[in-house]
Length: 201
Image 1 (cartoon, rainbow, N blue to C red):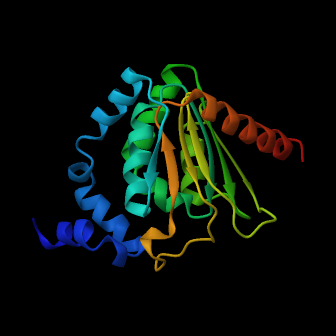
Image 2 (image 1 turned 180 degrees about the horizontal axis):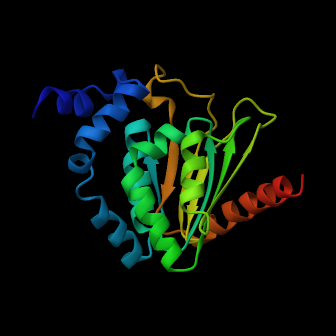
């Protein structure tokens, strides 16, 4: 095992967000090589239990797993740092949007910040028939972000402050449900209420 991978697996607590992203770019496919088997198991067994997501590295791996399996619907409430997060998963994210397009679906993203991130604006232009992005500054300093896919797959974060590259990777805590339509429906309804409010401002 090389030094980068030793650092990622043996000293995860010392990583910051910048380090975690760099490690995922280099070794993400290796770290999460068996993740699809996990998704298939949850789907086949109809297991609705949640998986712990304890740091930024986990967030990237589990979100890429979600993006890789979403077929027709994405609803996402993201932070102002959504550009860098999605850019790290760019290929999988774009493939998902193409798949959603072929299934006549829709991807909707709310960015909790004053401005729409540049990268997402570019993607919105490229996938204008599929992707719609809204930005809005929340009243609370800390909110919980989330992702819902296909009314089935959920990633639900604990509230946290606006992130910087130097923040510790374990500031990110979330629960991921790979097969929970009940939880997905609740989060989707919450998303839709925010979306509809913002669209009528």
